[in-house]
Amino acid sequence: MPLRLKVREIMVPAEELPSLHEDADVASAFRLLQEYFRGKDGTWMGFQSALVYNNRGRATGILTLRGLLRALHYQALLEDLLKGDPAGLFFLPPRWSEQFIKVREVMRPVGMAFVNENAALWEAALVMLNKKVNSVPVMDGDNLCGVVRTIDLFWLIGEILEDMS
Image 1 (tube, rainbow, N blue to C red):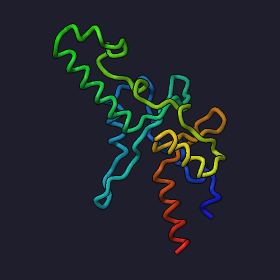
Image 2: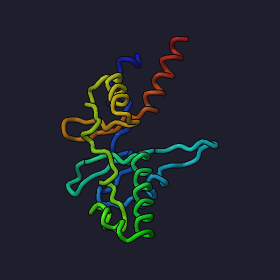
Image 3: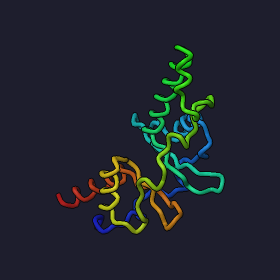
Image 4: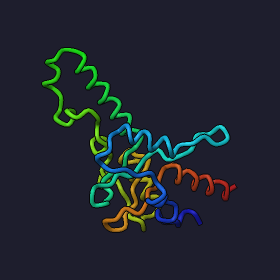
């Protein structure tokens, strides 16, 4: 029965998700997600987030479309400041001194919202609701083993409703 499933049974394994380094620039992240997004029968399908890793190969975050949109906002603000009054440069945070925004600046840290691989599905749903996120890293101790997404939960709810009718 679907209600008894654990998060690990419906998660997307980490090795199937797009991934990038935390020092990658946001333009690279856009290109990566674009590669994973495809049209099929008039419907766009694909991953809307990517896993972010550090130099040691440890997952440090998840980059979502929301994070990418935040990066676009930062980039537009930076360009406005540079085109306007030079005094605006005094208000630039040090991280904007580089030409491109780095993924680590707009990703969501893994520790902000996650579930254990043995968690019940309702626990993942609660984390998503409480943290206002659409995807949650699934952890096996300190290791990231996958991601559970709202779409995964919706598919399951659909199956439950079909079984009830």
